[in-house]
Length: 339
Image 1 (cartoon, rainbow, N blue to C red):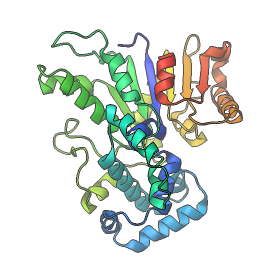
Image 2: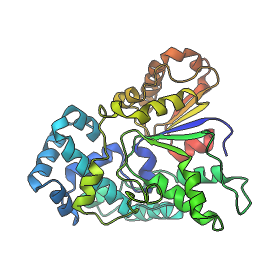
Image 3: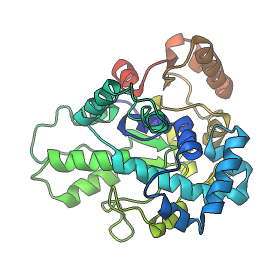
Image 4: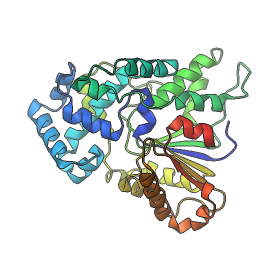
């Protein structure tokens, strides 16, 4: 277990190693993907193909990088956008992979990069980055050798605040614990995992069965119109989020942190604003780390300055350079270096 109060703030890039799209890649899927065989279920959920075409056309021509921001600017189109997001999340879920299969799939895709087509273009960016879920699970369970020992998350030493709609982290943790501690009753494992705070800032497409025995949905379910419609109701836009009581809990946890990790985060101003980070980061020994995978040096300088501007109420944090580390590396590399 970790010996410091740790808050991990997840953006779309945190799920990319497992087959989920980044924000920019999600835009490409929405604007360019047209021939998926399960697309008819999306048409049904939207009551017709015209609404989908209209949304795609307007979103593409808007040049807005984030579908979340596009929906916030155009609330009348939000119901359509939420159905589309739900469809893309379940579609990514159906092809997602974990553990050793992540590296295997990345290697397979590199070997077949010569097949250049629209489908190749949309798919080759999937499974980007190292398997940080497995690394984090290993850190959580290091030193546990007994057959009946589980980590204690009840003290709130570890918290996830995620901007993602997907359920990959919850699914991975449940499967890992369930298969690592076979002699422990499932109810104990579920109780353990429910004490681990994972706050979805913009909602989650659906709870898993272990999270909610009545409303829960299996991982990789068959995609149908009913599922997409119900999942879309669980998705919130940026300004709808302001009314979410979980947001206050997230801010409170940030204010108590000893170390904060931004993983796969794009540092969009609207997302920083939602968190209300200005004035929240505790002064003293709190350290802030973040990924900026594939960014150029000038881009890194801009985002470092952006975070310093947002957190200027706590200038003591920045008296030493090592207190704020934003590097062009993936989630796994950042955690291995600084966690």
